Amino acid sequence: MQCERLRLFFALDCPSGLASAISHWRDGLHLPGRPVATDNLHLTLAFLGSQPLTRLAELRQVAASLHLPGFVLHLDRLQQRRNGLLYLAPSQPPEALLTLADSLQQALRELGIALDERAFHAHLTLMRRCPRRPAAAAPSFTWTVDHFCLFASQQASQGINYHRLQQWPLLPQAHAAESDAS
Ligand code: 2AM
Image (cartoon, rainbow, N blue to C red; front, side, top):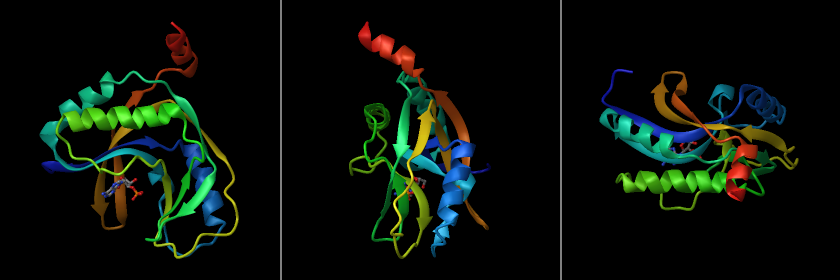
């Protein structure tokens, strides 16, 4: 990528099998609007906006300094915003997800990066410009989360591309439980 700035965000990248299952279910709803490409499905932890490339090293350091546990996420709620954004969300966000997003956001603010002031709201966007929410309830999609990623988003002629720049592991859940007990 030949540019001096990148539009960056930290996110959980949806595993391919789960992304296919979610897309297949969504496409079967036959809703009007702009579906998010299967390969682009993700859950954002922190949106950084446009950042100079010279920041990448410190962003990588921040991510590598987090030693937090993995978790299981149940996406069981289908919701819609007034702007037509249709998304899946967990009705009970795991504590470990909130801790991961909070820790990341706090460390980024300490670097002087301005983030959205609104509280973190875990969601996986399914469609944009969707005028209505289907009456059907969402099935519960189970996602075992064992890493998180730094992405760069780029506008291409066919739509938005997300490039995974790097990923960092989360601690195995059993190991995390032992660390808590010690
Ligand atoms: P969204 O799906 O709810 O639009 C990449 O754009 C990711 O960052 C998306 O998951 C997007 O959320 C999220 N994001 C958060 N704040 C954003 C902003 N101000 N502009 C663009 N994307 C934002």
